[in-house]
Image 1: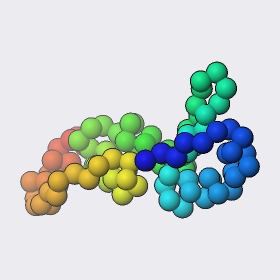
Image 2: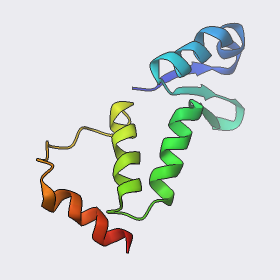
Image 3: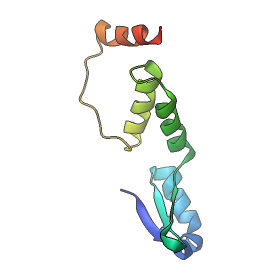
Length: 96
């Protein structure tokens, strides 16, 4: 669940908020004037999101990016999949 704060509170407690972003994978929403809001996320979260967006769905890169996002609690966990040969072969076929 994102943490919401005001711009002035964010300025006063910037170290605490940035620690939560980096150490706890929290997203901080900073309310600004004119009903605009800025979101603060960690570089790791941004990289995982970009990896997922740029990867071909069904590819190994996409699966790795999704796993990272699940570990960060950005995406809900998938049901467990038994990693048999058929499971791994689907990635070989999609890379070609």
